[in-house]
Length: 155
Image 1 (tube, one colour):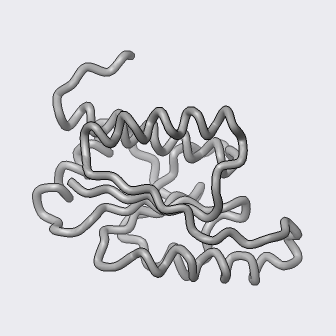
Image 2: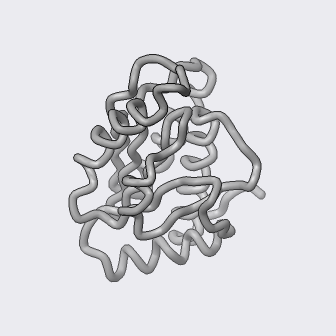
Image 3: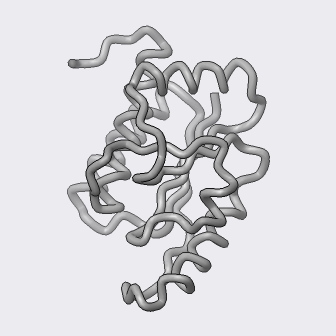
């Protein structure tokens, strides 16, 4: 299975970056994996929301290729870890290209990006920072891969 994660910008928090690196290392032992940090828009002014989302969308979309796209959104469908593992198992068996997870920046993802998703996933109904959601996503990918491989994962 080939997995890809796309998100705009680099993780700034050292503590979150350390956890991110830990999960990337764990995932890489179980699957072909690539993290791509695309161009993030400068500035945090929400009055430029459309411009920021457009810049970030263009950076993300150029990596979509023929991939199975899973976008993160608080309006997406909630699934449990076993369901995610099953979805990845089905893609591994029947889909010849990468499965690509797409997480947004501080404004989320544009409608243009969400419309290209094969599946829109919500990791929680709660709101988390865009950097913290990266860790939740990595942890769930790792958990799903361990389920798929029949490996033990601490409960």
